[in-house]
Length: 116
Image (cartoon, rainbow, N blue to C red):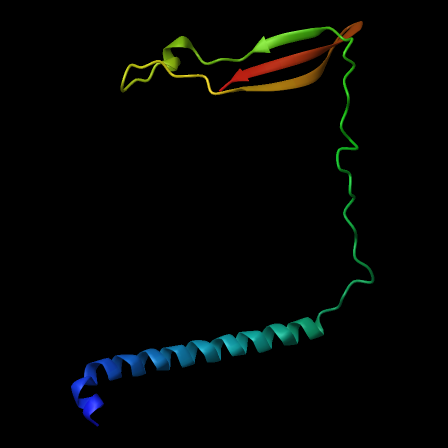
């Protein structure tokens, strides 16, 4: 009795929290029961399809004897300087892509370089 008188506010708050927790728990239980009923009533397919396991089998290897044409895609010089501080920006890497290019009568490798 002393606990209720001294900490009456705390007890009432905890009681309200317990009621909310019980309501949430009952709602969760209802949802679980509904999902179990749906699983039992759904038709399962006769078989499941497997995804192909390619692991790079479709990758094309380019002949190293083909001529290479290099294209560099870079930002303009004005954008290489920080607008706020005026300090020049530093290149942190390069992204390179190799594509097979076709011109009438010949093939070549188009190497696209993008500085970061």
